[in-house]
Length: 196
Image 1 (tube, rainbow, N blue to C red):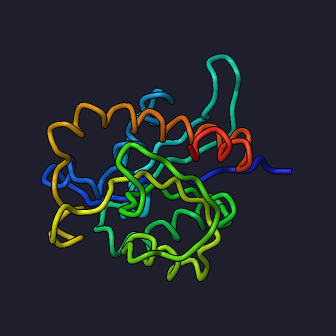
Image 2: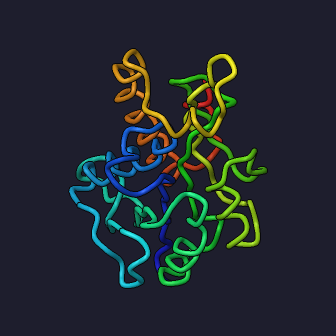
C-alpha cells in the first residue's frame, strides 16, 4: 500500500508586488511550513506551480508526507495548476488543504472546515471548478471586512495595516500549526483547538 500524501496549497498571487497583501496569507503560511520542513520552493515539472516535498510533524517524529504548493499564476486560475499537481502526486480532494483569506472572519482568527461554497473567493471558485467538487479542507485566515465603503477586491489586494502587521506573524504561525494538526490529527481535534 502506498503512503497517503497531503497536498497543502497556499492561495495567493505571484510576485513581490502582491507579497504583503491580505489575499496572500496562503502564501505566507506555506512559506512558514516550508521553513519548518527545512525546504524551499522550487518549480514543479509542470512549470505552473512551485512545490516543497517533505514531512510535517514534531521534531524526531516522522509526520505525514506533505507537498506544499503555490501556483505560479494568479488567484483566479489556481485550479488548473493545482489539479495537475493532484494528478501527479495521486492526491484526491479529501487530502487537499487550501489556505486562504476570509473576509467574514475577524483578523487574527482562524476557522478550519471541510467543504462549503466559495463565498465569492476567486481562488476557491477556481479550485472547485477544476476539481469538480468543493469537498476539500480549508484553513480560513480571517482578514475582516473592508472599512467603510471600500471595495472588497481593493481591500484584499492591499497590504495589512501597520497594527495588523505586528500581529500577522502570530496568525501565520497559528495557521501553520492548524495545518500540521489537520494532517496529523484530523479535523475534529483541529477544529476544537483552532476554531476559537
